[in-house]
Length: 152
Image (tube, rainbow, N blue to C red; front, side, top):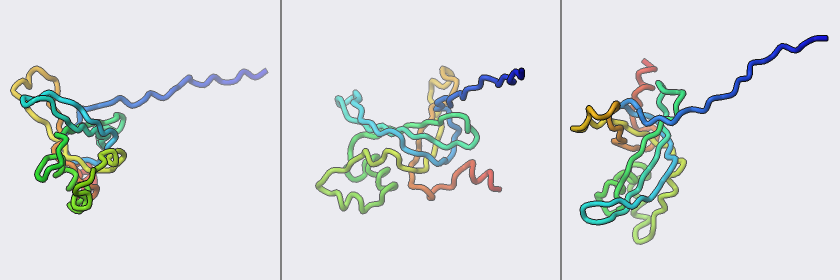
């Protein structure tokens, strides 16, 4: 009678979420669009939070995440309108003037993001700097940091 060789009992370990992303420009996908109520000095206001899954070549075994927040305001010159203009182009607001703009269409969208580290006066209290999305663009418009370095 042959006794079968035992196989190792191996199960996959899921990737861990990671917000500790090095500074640079990366490919990303918008995974969540959420409206939040935040308290401000001028009262309670609405904020839009975008969550990104960022492709960081040096951290392939993590789910690399970043977020950005904007006042829920589409008046000309507002931060949110400027971001959406960079992604969709100016014509989107010309066509939507007087109507509504569905922010849910951002979910699943491929973009490129620039990540920066913000050093605060309370830096010594934290083990890692505040990570912020500095810029968002449509794909193909940024010189991607680690991809450019890898191709040299």
